[in-house]
Image 1 (cartoon, helix red, strand yellow):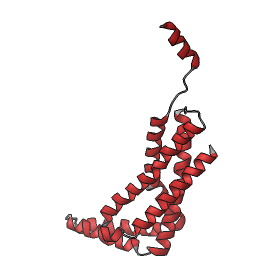
Image 2: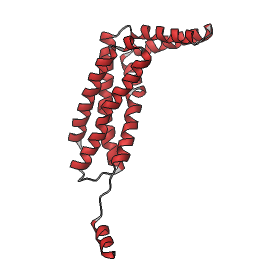
Image 3: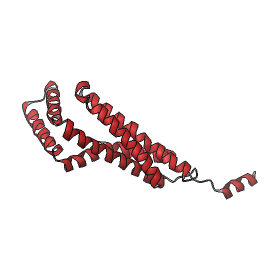
Image 4: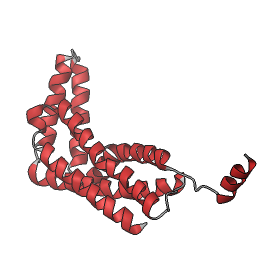
Length: 184
């Protein structure tokens, strides 16, 4: 299992890192709303390797069969490696290339709130929330935990559950097959 998990986890991790690095730079140009869509799409692309990793394990190690539990285990391990890559690349990009991200994002959120007709009290509350967000992002450990839990983990878990459900396959019991054939 180790070889399959490492192979597919590392490939998926590199894919998510490259796609994130390539798209994060353009977030402000394309708009934060579109950037979120692009970001989650890149996660889905990278997490497709969870499906292929489980399938590879089933076909090459499991002899064509895999239980839901084993598929889930393989998928979660691949997904966790991918998530770690995601968080590490986020930390590198944020602290080295996007130190002004919270300010730009805050301005975007406040303008969006004003355009939607938010009251001064609602705007003040939003300003406070955005200040707290910046404080959390500026702490590397807290930022890593928040990014891990809120961004790649949910997407990865969904992809893993779906993949495990689709790819589970029981072994055909030779006695049942013979018995059924003899009965006809």
